[in-house]
Length: 410
Image: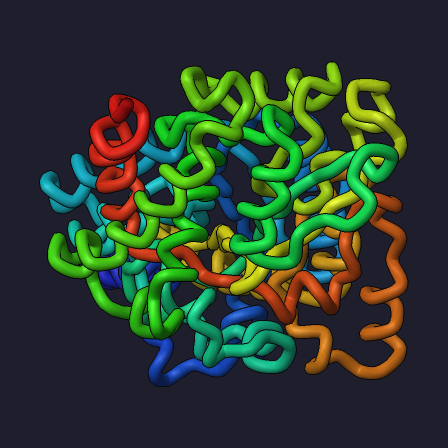
């Protein structure tokens, strides 16, 4: 009899332990506030899987974020460098196998990877309504955070950072940069051979052409929110191809050759063959100036109708074994404290998705006065002129049609 009660006692203990793990892995947000989530996360390990190809980014996570999470939330952050597509492949296989006890708690993704993850139901959520930092300091109605390359976010990922497309020019050769694409066309005609753009197979070259889609569209909101359609692309494309044909003969090498990559365009700019370059990451020129690749007279500019921005996000896999830890960690990564350090050139220099208008005065002034370098535009101008990305299918449409419409034309 005593042995039976002993076994019953052991079974009850094991069941309680199992129940605790299950609750942790299957967090019911409808019945839990953030304070309870944070308390549940204390003493746990969070597995962050992300691209690891930039040493500054890795140092930001390992040397600053991880110690802070340990200090303030008693969370151990484990960073695993991996390609995002490999993460999604792993999650997809675990979904097929009904594996509910996954080893990935937070993933860094956007664009096509997010679209695939959402369509295959690989993500947990919606969870962004339960992030105090996001609700307090971000413009939660922003198209940039509710649409990811044309895919509705629906609370399944939280904006972690953003890069913004800017044009760069040499102030010793260009007195006043153009303020619109019409002015750019005129400048190109007046300065033949001093401008070009990468082949749109390159992402930066493709973005240059995508800006023309926005110029041709009557509404940025409709272009961003509506799914891709061949009819709309073809209608907008008429104006896009006309523009590109009109500038072609005055481009570098008369438009008979286009740089195959942004690296090649940067080289032409550094040599003085062209007087402008371009690309994502509004602060990217700073380290090139420091390295002596770009002239110190390099500055950046944005033209109307605005500047394409690429927001990147953090998400939680459907089978994360530590959803409380994941939510607590993501909330901290979105906090003003973590975002301010991420913004500094020391580690990453990545622009913040925080709406500075939502910050207390002292913090707002701190963000807006941060010196990101003489070539970088003011934070307010970048924020006010940020354009969210269109459906990712337009990227492929431009690649497919540019060859026939522009490169192969006489």
